[in-house]
Length: 78
Image 1: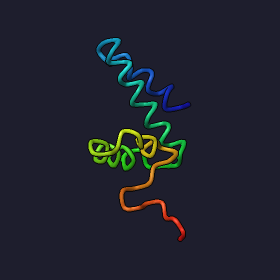
Image 2 (image 1 turned 135 degrees about the vertical axis):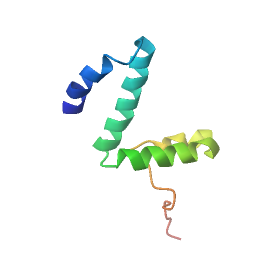
Image 3 (image 1 turned 90 degrees about the vertical axis):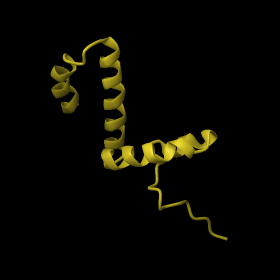
């Protein structure tokens, strides 16, 4: 909750209502990644790098609570 309280002052300079909404969306993504015990910068960089060619019906794999770095895949025992 502290980052939200500290950020409140910064949101005053968002420029417009839509700028404030964009900032709120970004903060939500960052805080969700933190709650999932991920490095938000690493998660966001990887997702932005992979999202353009990721299958649309599998976008849930990129959510913070299901995300795996690009080199890691789910292994299935045969």
